[in-house]
Length: 220
Image (cartoon, rainbow, N blue to C red; front, top):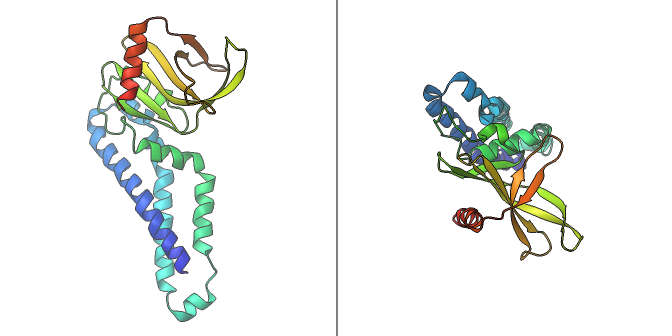
């Protein structure tokens, strides 16, 4: 029983904060955003999954408190509540991961109802916008975005980790910064053209544009 209680306390500390942050943000931005924009915010459409989990944590904790004592602990199923709670999280794994990212996203408390960036509509699974200047550039970080690319010079295929993607809404351009998983000196900054079935990449020939993207990434 103590294992269940420890698990519940830990989960309430973690996900209770995420839940409060998201609901506080919705209350803050709702007066300034149209219903259409608010519906597009991913955390708004997924928040009910987290609310149900918080309710499950509360009810499990209440039931455990009623069963406390020597006899209750003696006959209680080991980790019964923990298993049930973990099962719910596993069934909603992607939603939990996204909500945690949403709670750290620059879009969370943004009240711009006429945003020119892709924002939530362009968000990949396991991603969040780290910084946004609300006018020209934003930078998105990714949890597990990798690419298998072939080096045009060597003809050798390598796996690259995506360090960040950037969007310049004034130039209507996107960029991607990648790093070889096996050779951290092997990095590229490229144009990024997301597609429905396949993404495309291009070389940046303008040194000033290249430096601008590199400098902004280094500042995060």
